[in-house]
Length: 89
Image (cartoon, rainbow, N blue to C red; front, side):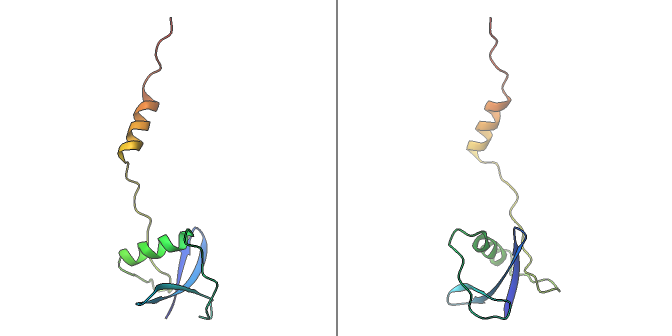
């Protein structure tokens, strides 16, 4: 079964296999050139899989980016940027 997922405004077709995960295919389902390992498609497919492999009535994969969680480093930077500047005399 050929699935379609939209990542950053671009649609990608793929097949899901138990052996090798996702395989990028053309609209017709033929083998396509595989995307690089850093392409956002792979993160989207991983998120889709971890969120239950839902598919909408229009055949699109339903997934969401996780909500931003502020880490220790981010909060330290934010505190530093909101501190008042030292007074100069």
